Amino acid sequence: MLYKLLPIVEKEIINNKYFILTFSNYDMAGQCYPGQFFRLKNPQQNFPILPRPFSIHNVYENKVSFLIKKVGTATIQFSAMKVGQKIALLGPLGNGFTLHQNKKILIVSGGIGYAPFPFLVGKLNQMKNEIFFFHGGKTAEDIFSNDVIDFTEDGSIGEEGLVTDGIEQFLQKNQVDVVYACGPQMMLKKVTEICKQFNIDLQVSLETIMACGIGVCCGCTIRIIENGKMVYKKVCKDGTVFDGYKVVWNE
Image (cartoon, rainbow, N blue to C red; front, side):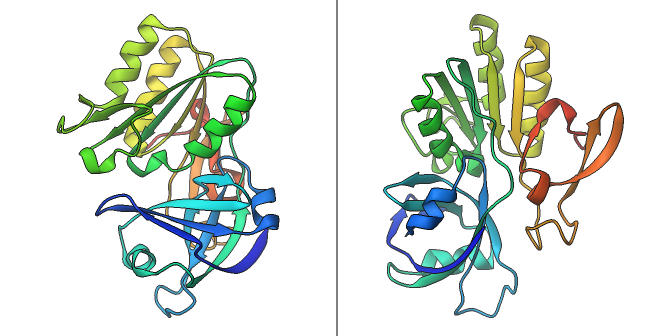
């Protein structure tokens, strides 16, 4: 885990809701693993006091990028920053996805849940996996790539409907060994129910509110079934990636 005060080296505006910030640092890039996250803070602003967590979006040429959605004060501040301005970064934090080799893999994401997967896909491609990628969003603004099978709730781009509708139909016709998923909790709960029908290994990356990000405050605690008993785990320290079948999903 590193603490760095680094300048933004690239900024990509995707649309009115999403943008990508990229930083360059040899040591930081070398420690990153798919599924981990960093905590970012604008040192020029007193509020919000605490840094905010963001998944590692991609790592390339000693650069680390973060896909960010404008949803609150901190992310709006980041969206206004320019290349050359410095941001404080702490990470990489948490545990990532378990990687597989020579498998048929399905990736499922919803909205900003797309963020951790370009880095993961790069690693899985190196390990000769066959990858299928389904992504869903409410509107066209929640779609990031033409290289995946997209679903939108309003039908403005891709297929109209929920991404979970698409993967259920896909799994009825195709054999898959492993599913990786990230997105809204209701989507992950549905993905878990579908995967259970087909008896497929499932890894989910959870999104929760975090305060400390290092397992001290317990603000991101979730319930897990472990050895037949319900236990509490911290998403920031024990995750963010968990076995989807062990998560006790909220009703």
